[in-house]
Amino acid sequence: MGASFSLFSSDLDGSISSQSKPGLGDLPESCAASILGYLDPPEICKLARLNRAFRGASWADFIWESKLPPNYRVLIEKLFGDSLGNLGMREIYARLCRPNTFDDGTKKVWLDKRTGGVCMSISSKGLAITGIDDRRYWNRLPSEESRFRTVAYLQQIWWFEVDGEVEFPFPPGTYSLYFRLLLGRASKRFGRRVCNTERVHGWDIKPVQFQLWNSDGQKASSQCFLREPGQWNIYKVGDFVVDKANASTKIKFSMTQIDCTHTKGGLCLDSALIIPK
Image (cartoon, rainbow, N blue to C red; front, side, top):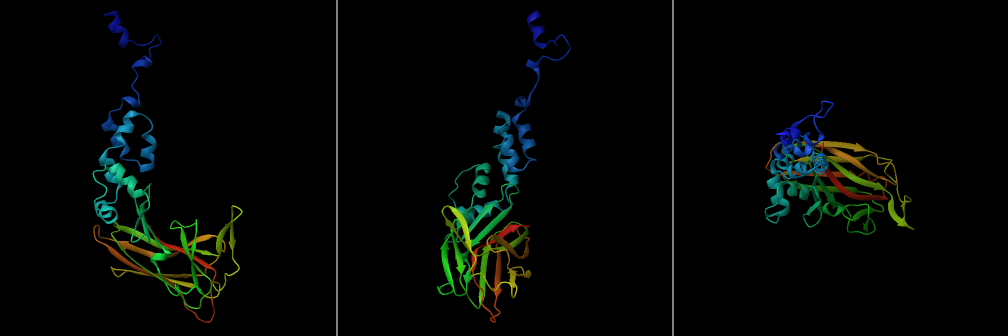
């Protein structure tokens, strides 16, 4: 009896023995999973390193399914077909968070790791660029500063026009569309980045016009002068709203400066970008 009693006895100062105090490691895995469900994905991964209970709970399918877009099955079919097999929800989330290339390598789609929002980038090769096949005006250049490893460089032109079109099952929400541009031509010299801006001209005379249309009849437009030579900037075209969860939305967009009273040049076009607002 003395031995049994000693297991449950208090210390001389009245406190419970440290050996009998419950800790986070004693938390049932189901309770740990319920806690993780309230956190965003990066926080879940951090807490999973805390102990065995949270590590095991972090693999629960119901946690990661709640973080995925509501139409994630449609996205999987669009991007992977049947190639994912029987992956768990955490693995599916991780796979969707990577840049996933489709449409002959001209588009990449990924999930924002924190919010689970769908993001898309469309390379310059996936856009219709007036004069792109005439090397007097445009050149394709390799670039480490592009996620597609290539950009379109404009030397000089009178009629500047770039059009794009994409059809994709975006989840419901509000999205913003941008163009990623650089005034100048970036390169490496002795291991250091340099940007030649000698050919940059014409962008401060008249603003560039941006337009957007989608299959639901929504329209948006904006205009601005291109400034800040030597660094990449994103220029907003406009916003659009997606209401239907499992249907594809078609978006058309453009960027123009067609005032033929002057030439413009020295511009790098990397991509168009669609992100949740």
